[in-house]
Length: 607
Image 1 (cartoon, rainbow, N blue to C red):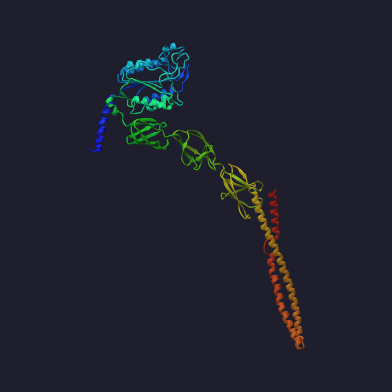
Image 2 (spheres, rainbow, N blue to C red; image 1 turned 60 degrees about the vertical axis):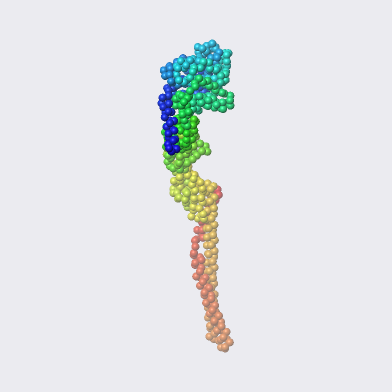
């Protein structure tokens, strides 16, 4: 036989009698839970009402038929005790559970549970105006059922100043029925502590173990007592009085004979799921799979590893976790501590300001948002700010739909000071319309958008850019400001220097032209003189009588002939160049008027 076959056989050997025991021995279960916290004459106790509600809910999960009484009077308490006894007496093998939280006092060794409407002027009235705990025990004993559990979380200081016999806690159990377990939140004569939260210390710890599978009921209370001692540093020690000598497992509702006790302690635990209502939860692992919607308590989970998938990514935040389940313990799974927001924003690229210093983009979902209601502000350049209230719930995804409205465009107003100005917003040209007083109005400027405004003129050596200009909705923003005026002043000065340089050059050419003309005139005069002298020298040559005279006259003719060509060339060059120098280039008078105009504009800017 293989090892696998051996394991299967052993499993069947153990499980068959266990199933038989569960099917045969499962008994009806009835519980009466009373929590008195609001007293007409004694004031308010913070925890009993909550304690009763939470104990009742747990017992219902364990299969008990529960009657819950909160803040009730004596008659209601007595009727409920009688009803419990009748239900238990009808089925001999049934299980009974009585729980009381509230004021309890002892008198002459008898414990009394105080109704919410009690008016007890002296100790002698206790027997007629309060419910004796022994009455509850006697009623249960008369039922002759299988097991009765009585839990009294009523061990507080006596609220009555007239109490003589004892002033602290309850007295020890007097006559205890056979087949019963009686549990005091603290030992006889001591006082139990109220909790700082929803439950009292004792009930808070009892709730941790009451539903644990695989724990015998006596082990449930043993562990509760140890946990209470730890929580209070030994100041509170619960008391357990038992007249039950078999085993009972409240998680299955079975009363197990001793021969089956070992088989009943299964290697199982439980999983407690705490999620918002409606949240889908899937648990899967080696021991099986389960599906829940909302919170729940899963019993009889075989020990092992389990994966948990929570949420749907639509209405609920998705979560994936690994849980380890151990024998006899409850593993708590509580995935959510915050909520999330998913946006549907038109246009994209908006920013959501949820709180001071807390903003984020809206193009993706945002998780980790604390539960609460926020006044969110949505912003985007070029659009009107939009305020909307956002409610974030635990574990849920809030879908926020917003349509933002465009801002109306604005305009820029520029004083040109007689110049041709060109304006660009983020390198895109904007169009101008004439404005009053010679101003230029550039329309269609996007509102609320930081812009780089560039200004150009025909004469500016470099354009001028003013960065980060923001125009409000339908606003006319005047650019005739410190950032603009110095640049235009410099541009006009550069233009004046250029015109002045042109005027200076023009004047230099005019002077050179007159000099060339003068040279031509002088050259022409010199040419005429040389011609005359050459003619006279020619006559002397013709009339010379001797060799020496002839030779001298010939030299004179040759000299004046050479000078003639030189002076004629100078004269011709002077006359030829003077028109170009005198007539080329701009009229100096026009340049002078331009300089005067620029000086006037610069004077206006200086003002």
